[in-house]
Length: 232
View 1 (tube, helix red, strand yellow):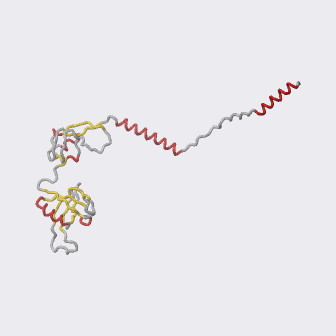
View 2 (cartoon, rainbow, N blue to C red; view 1 turned 90 degrees about the vertical axis):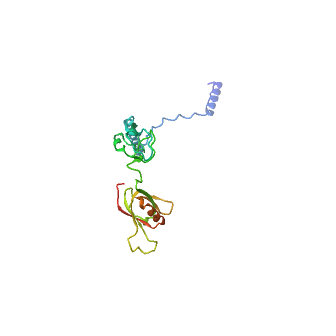
């Protein structure tokens, strides 16, 4: 080998030694196995089932209607409802807090009295009518404020028959004779007041006894006795 060729080979080897070497390419990644979580899978299946049920419900109820009663003329409070005051409308079957009277109950509501002003076009509800207004002729409604010790623990409701009894002053002796008593009927359940633990009970009494009862109720020296429960 000539000296020139030898020198060339040495130069080539020197350049090869100083040249940076490339790293070897990485090998293929090993496939990883996804961890299955039974709780998440069950939750997903439950959500899918719920969605399906909701869709089925919407499809089954969409477009379904029922007939209800609507007011066709303005009816003032206290007026008797006539057949010409009511009409039939179709309403969709949807969840609602309103409870309109169904059309097949029209005969039950003709002849009832409006408990509030009914406007043309509004739906008729049970609370908008009554057999008669409170109080009826010859009767009066008196509100009585009572503490828990002045009335029974049993819940009072409309229609209950009660007696309002006059009681002695605090610490006084019981009366020697039968105390003053007025028969009454509960109109509405007890309602909380802003005065301590008192509740107000509306009772209906004969108009001739209303003034005497109101005067005694104002003193706070009365008690309510429940005689019989009404239908409410």
